[in-house]
Length: 201
Image (cartoon, rainbow, N blue to C red; front, side, top):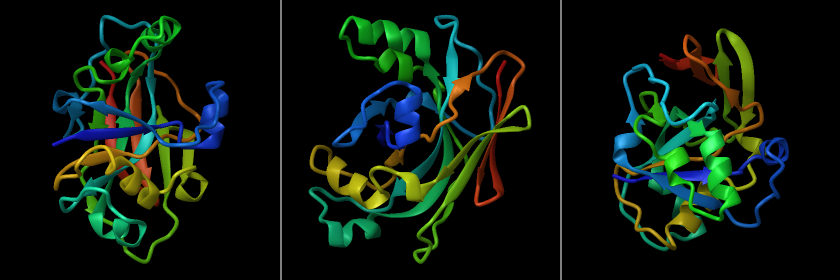
């Protein structure tokens, strides 16, 4: 099982981090040990002083495929979840300054919180999702605002990695990312339905 992640997939998010808008999806991966499931808490890592949340929609691959063509991309996923891509922002910045890979800032243990998956209506074009921090709305996302939609991501990623049943793809975060501290409570919603809770301890 692979955890594939797409960075900088919402224009407003790229602007808030002062990054250029990508011309192709920015792809990175997390190891299976990054998964955080069943609403378990995240224990604040000792190697960072600037841990950020990034609320995202996550799709699950339902069949194997390589070099998927646009006409068939929609048949490769049928479930969706809410996920949080936790990022050690200070560690990431230091890696970027040196031109180094930044997996240690993104792929550390329990850095991929994820809710249960729900069926994705094949006729639903627009999906709205939200992140709340201590009950306050901090992210309001809409798939209409994605730079690269689900189908494009499927086609692009499958050029480089064989997609396998059970793989999951974090599809990018909208604007509103920010730091968390011990004692904070995160919540994730899809179409108004509460999907995920994650306490920071």
